Amino acid sequence: MRISGVWQQAPDEGYNTECATSFGDAVKRLQAGKYDLVTFDHGVWNRFDEELWPYLRAGVPVLFCTADYDSNSTAHRPPDRPHALLQKPFDIDVLLALIVKLLHTAAQPATTTSP
Image (cartoon, rainbow, N blue to C red; front, side, top):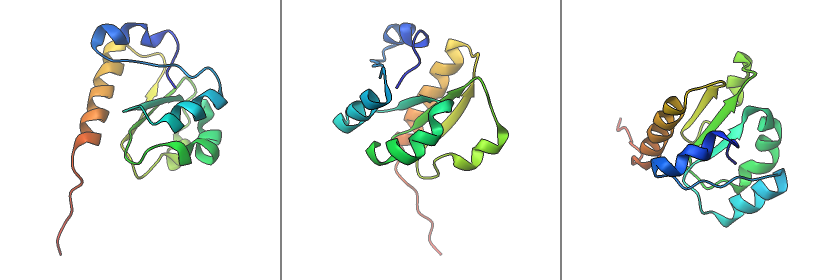
């Protein structure tokens, strides 16, 4: 559930990372429920939508990374959780800033509006 190679610097930044090596491995890791943010290559979106969505804990932010951005794909982004799409190639500092933003957004209590 992380991008191999990019995350080699993450422990130096204070993040613990794990990598799912297959779709089945991703399902097992999601079922374990020990995560605060999930990253996906945008190419797995179709399977994510159909098969991985039920395994994600509510409110956990999702970061999609892609080298093949299709502006029409924005209709498929999850509406009920913080999410972002990061286009490859990207700078590690941009990635880390986006992770901080998503984690901060997810930690905020939901706001309600009164009539």
